[in-house]
Length: 123
Length: 108
Image 1 (tube, rainbow over the protein chains, first blue to last red):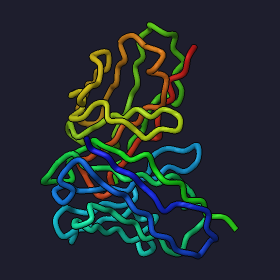
Image 2: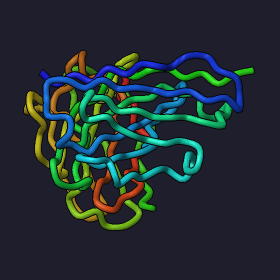
Image 3: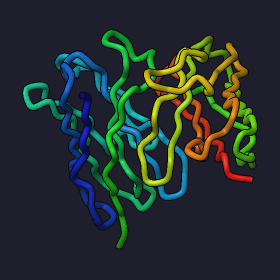
C-alpha cells in the first residue's frame, strides 16, 4: 500500500536551516509529481512546493517560500526533500508531503498524504 | 492566483441531518476541484475530485457538484465520523495549487 512518511522536523531558531524528508513506498515514486503542503497551528492548508517526476527538473514554489526553500527528490531512494533556509516564525507548521494522483500532469488532486512533521521556529 | 472561498466557516449539524458546504473560485476552474476531509491530528484525506467523483473508498453519502466557479459538497446523512474540517482545492491553474480556508462541520 502507498505510504508517505515525513521526518526531520523539530524546534529551530529563526534564521536557521533544516532539511525535511518524505520516504515513499508502495508505488513507483519516480513516476509521480510530489507536493509539500503545510499547515500552521490552528490554520488551513497552504501549498508550499511541487516537483515533477523523473529527474525533478521542474520545480514550483509558493511566493511565501520562494528563494528560501528548495524541493528535491532522490528517485533511487524513493525520497522527497524540502530544504528550508532562513526560517521565520511564520514558517512554523506541520509539513505534509502529498502525491499528485496523475502520472503526467500537475492538473490533478493529491490522493495520498503523509502524517506530517512539525517544524517550530522559535527563539 | 485563483482564490478559493468556502462558506460557512462553521456549520452546526445534528447527526443524521444533511450538510451542505460551498466553495467559490475567483475564476473558472472548470471541474478541476477537489474536496478533502481533515480530522484533528490527522492528514487530509481526498474525498472528491473532478468536482463530483468520489475517491476510492469514500461512502456514497458524500457527493460533490458544480463547475466553473461554484461548487458544493453535500453529506446526505451525517455520521459521527463525519464531523471534521473540509477543504476545497483547485488544480486547474497552477502554480499555486490553492485551497479554501476550510469549513468546520460540528455537532449541533
